Image 1: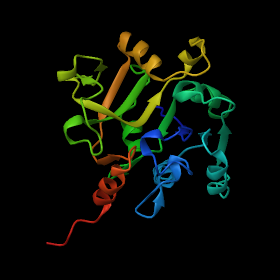
Image 2 (image 1 turned 180 degrees about the horizontal axis):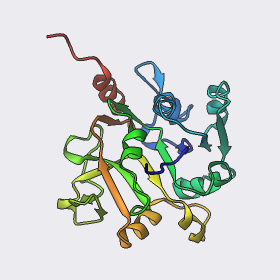
Image 3 (image 1 turned 30 degrees about the vertical axis):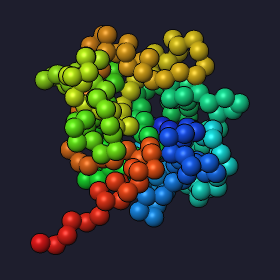
Image 4 (image 1 turned 135 degrees about the vertical axis):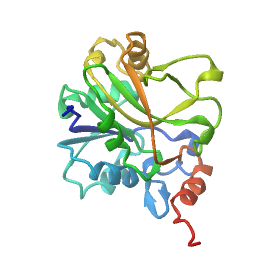
Length: 236
């Protein structure tokens, strides 16, 4: 059996500028979709798989998220202060909680339906060949996303930063990533794109297409798109 991570990082520290004016007085993870906060949609996915350790990073209006999650004794909340650390710095800051092995990470500004995104990653993870496995969706059908894709995906599942017309897939906010390279980045705040680029260069960066439905809720208009996606299909 292939080993898969038992630790998860939930990213919840961002300023949510694309979601203004809704985030003027509350953090984006507390924006509601179908009557439930975005971070609760993410936690529902996490609760459906076996995890031993879960960390959540906070920065913008952190007290609101702390109050919202005060009943969750299984979560370690890490407030980044005085400056936000971005995805790479935030993950590195959480390693004393998560451990040194590969970890799941999950964004909190999206909604999923159907297959569990973390389970899909676990089912396709191969530590012998992979340093990162990204969950992807075809750009042409990615709800709430506009513009070109992020990556090209070859027949073996490897990702690359190809020219725009062949970048057919977008990253949809869930991954398994090895954390060893985090120690090599000198700056305190940085994006995980730096690690992805290094892993792409060594041929150990892979992607898997999500077989369910996904919607980006990074902008206000994404709320209605996500709620429409979540509605049960009408009886025929």
